Each structure stands twice: as structure tokens, then as C-alpha cells.
Image (cartoon, rainbow, N blue to C red; front, top):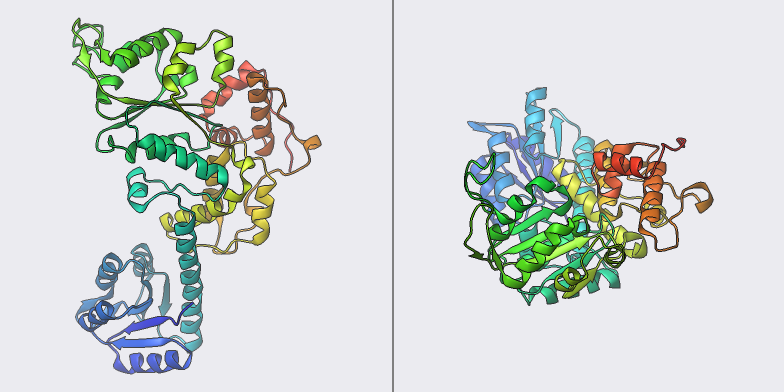
Length: 460
């Protein structure tokens, strides 16, 4: 890392002079100021990395200066110092973004240790920024629109992005996205939408399995006031709401057959009729659908219409599971660790090299979503120490000690085995298992009942 630039802002001139001399002798570039105005002027002219700021200045409140610095220069870290600080003041300073707090009088070794600790944090932060820029496959502008990074280095994930960006150039073309739960299907759908000419209009995300049979027509087609009990006002449905935008249909395989037939007609005619009305309304939308099921198998079982598949998958994007692209685990882990540390106002912890190797041996039934949840938990429970394998409770035992996915392409058998695997890996914690599988806790309970799955003996 380049030489650290430190600004000392304190109204005691003797202290700033003494600290400046000590820091210069210690190999840092030091600046000093005795008023808030002087300090802000230096910040404006010099590339400062670290500010050492007194809480009580003559006629000024250091916390107010801290607020201003964090707004204007968010990348500058701040160490607060004071002879009068109470616990409430310390907490407020940390809440406002200070990285450390020292009580006067302090020894030179105290300030040096605090600076070196901050320096390590800055070094890691800058490495993460470079890694993020290297591995984020989408532009900064697009990233801000979708509020998600698209991280990866594997050829498979780069191909996914390439097809997604191609799809974005054809805003009227329907897209089918397939992949296991937790692979990021909705994220890819958002990339397609916000990179297309439809980006300034609504991206309407609908979980096809969450709409009850009694409300299907009303939710998708809208209704007229008084058309049925409870219809107190006119309402636009999903088709009409998505006009000029994108309708994202998640879990498309769970859509009832009667709605599939009506969906087919709307796609062909681009016209809908609200419940309780007779005249048609023209609509213009693009459909992006997603599923973790094998639609061809559902067609054979007469549970999904073949002609609807032909309308939905003009372009098909398949997202491989995380276990098939282990080279993406490390950049994802680093990104999630930095992201959650920032959100939780905690220093970004170093990561043990062995942790990445351990995670690469894990199957990740919950894919990227599971890795994200694991990292969030590890950051919450960490106390500033290095993240290691013990912080990530994964089971990497041989196949003989844990359930195995059936190699046959039988959807129900594999779904049942994945549920057993998730329960096994999380010691029968159904909430954690549901999160890993990318489903709700109640949905897991229903599937356990469906497949007659009992809780496995816990392992420790």
C-alpha cells in the first residue's frame, strides 16, 4: 500500500505538533490543523486516508465535523480522540462511521496500533474494490439499477451474462431462465430488463405459485369494481401493470393449467379483458419466466402446455449450480464479506485461505443464496478475527455419510434427496434448510409431508 496520509485535527497545537512529528518518524505523511475550517480545507486539497479528530474543539463539535467528512469524503476513515468522552458519545461516534476511539491521554504506541489496524483495513478494502471491479461482469450504471452485483470468473457465468445482454437487445423477445433455487434467476432477469429499452418502465416480478386459484384471473387480468365480492375498486392486473415493461414470472412450472391457456392467448394477441368487463385492453410487455423444474418432464406428465413453452423460451438461459463453477466461490465470498461488513458497520475480516478450499468441496444445494446467507451469519458472529472454516458450518463428508442426489433424471426423487441433504447439513434446522433450498419454511414443511420425510438423526 502507498504511504498513508494522516490529518490530525485538534485544537491543542502542542498535541498536533507532537503527533505530526511522531507520525512522520514512523513513516506516515502527516498534516495538522487546529480548527474545523483548517481541517476541511486540507481535506479539500490533499488526498487524506485517515483523520484523527478530537471530539471537543474550541467552539466546535467534532461529531458535526465527523458527519460532514463522512458525507463529503466517505472513503476517509476517522479515529476519534477525547479527554471527556462518555459511552454515549463513543457509541454515537461509531454509529456515525468512526473506525476507532482513543481516550486522552494516550501513549504513542496506542495511536500507532490504532493507525496500523486502520491501515490493514484500508489495504483489504482497496484489494476488494479492485477484485470487485475485476469480477463484476456488469457496468456500474447497470449494477446501480438492479441493486445487485453479478460476480463471477467462470466461463459458465460469463456465457450466462453474454446471452442475457444479447436478450436485452431484443426487448420484445420472451426469455426462459432455468436453474436450481438460489442460482440468481431473478437477478439475471433484472439485468435483461434494465439493460434493455424497457428499463424506464416497470419490472413486475410475480411468483406464479403464490397466487391462489380464486384470485388468478383478478391478479393477472385485473377487475372492475363490483365484479365480485371484495372488488371494492377497479384494479389493474399484472399484464396491464407491466405495459411497456417486463413481466417476470418466477416458478412458472407451478402455474395452473387453466391460467396457462389464457397466458398463451395473451402472449399471442397482446390484449386482455378485465374481470367484469367486455372490452379488451391492448398491452405491450415482454415475459421473462424462470423455473427450477424440468418443463419437458412436466409436459410428458400433462402438467404443462408444450405450446406455452414454445412461446416462453424463444431465448433460453440456463444458470449452472455453484458446485459446477467452484472458481466463482472465492470472488462471491469476498464480495459478500465486504458487503455485509459495510452494512453492519464492521471491519472487513481477513479470510483464511483454507476456508475457500473447504467451501469448494461443499455441494451448495442452496447455491449462491446459501453462500450469501452463510457469509452474513459469519460476519454477524465474527469479532473482528479472521474468517475460517469453523465460521461456515458445511458438511463435506464423503457421500457414504450424507444423502446423495439420485443420478437418474427423476425430478421428485432428486427434490426429496435435496431436502434430506439440506436437513442433514443444517442439523435438522428447518429454517436454515429452507433458506439453503431457496424456499419458505412452510413450503419445506409441505414438501417434507409430501415425500414423507422425517427429521434425520442430528450430527455434531
